[in-house]
Image (tube, rainbow, N blue to C red):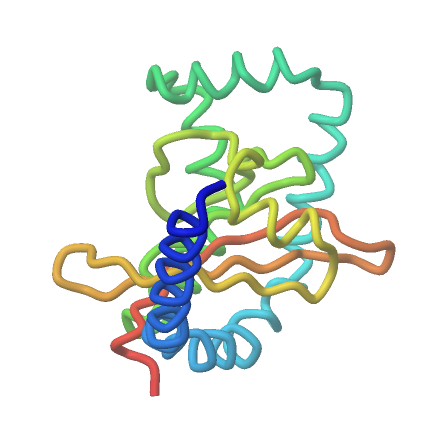
Length: 189
């Protein structure tokens, strides 16, 4: 490779690296308060028997599903199969999650709980798909193990600054699922 090309490539890389810390700091400003909120205000109720029982039951129901079965369920969800949607949106876990969201004073904007296959078990609001295992929210929590919290970048939604924060759900035997929360970071102290 020509020396000029090497020097130009090195200069470009160094230039990009000088911006990386500033960009990381800007995005990371919400991580600490969001993590603290999750640890204090959310993790305690993720151990509630309603949550654990619903996830364990979903894991049992889905344990034999092949990927093609999961894809069919996901396509049915996207096609707005009302019976499938109602089985997730109108169950005991979803009722529990809605109460927790409502009690958060607007900090929590949405919640959905996923099983060990990445399928939604309960939720407060609609989701575009049923299967989440192809997304970071599941891959960086359930797939990592108990005690994991993943805070994604902040995005603007309806004039609010929302970060999705995902947490592994575990029982005494280890990771059983995950939960994702929309957190209005402007409401965190």
